[in-house]
Length: 359
Image (tube, rainbow, N blue to C red; front, side, top):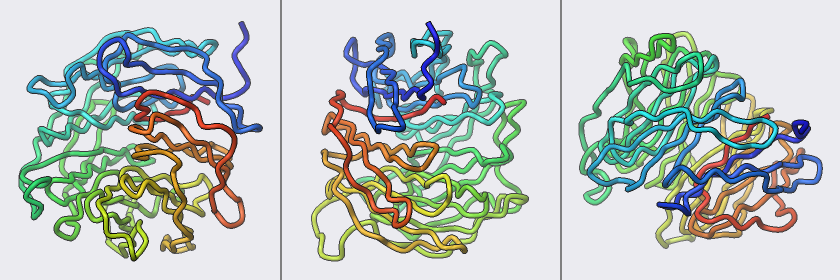
């Protein structure tokens, strides 16, 4: 069988037991359609995924009882590029509970994980065969913030590796900080950044996900509790962050409960999108030459609880996983204005939590 010329989209279904699966779809980037290729069911509650840059391996949170008293696991899979089938290689303890985010360095040397409930991050070496070795580095976060329900202690919600693999930024919702780590990918070690170990966000912000601008000089953070996006200037040499501006993701007249989840930037660096769960929408922004954001509008996500986004490499399509809505919606991105237009039929998927592309 020849490998499809179209990229493969991996989608995790955050469901326990036999219903949990990682599905592989053929993503027709000309037509903007998805076609199911394979289902890998030997993973329970696969919440978050990461794909190695060489496209050979996939890593997944494997959480039979997500957020329970026992540590989650991180599982490694070999990817069959012809079929999208995944072959489990091994798994390691994540060294924390409610593990919710993974990232892989560009050379496939290490995996980093954020553990939400236990408020910690860890790094794992990757063998030459793609399997995960026991963690070489572990950092427990400490502190609290002002929200009595959501910020009683640390809640590491993401950890994102810088484009040059030298740093990792961890957004901790529970303590309103972005923690900056120096990363040695070869040894899979995380060390607090000497020149600036963290930055604080305004109390009650609840930072959730982080993304780097394609130029490597700006960083954006979506704040789950304050429903906003914060723009930072980023110094690639030192890893330092300088806060610039925070902008809302919601209409001024919206007063009901809503919580942000994910954000993504187009490959050309012109547009940013962030999700609102509750308002069930996608906030659309333009990015100027200095990295500043301007709100373009807010588009319905066409499903409940937009959890995760993916933008195609050509910048023409945005895919939105509405997790409790049990669907994936494909939007066409206007290349001039950045506005989103729903395209084609919605794809029904049970509890889609993470979207990752194999090119």
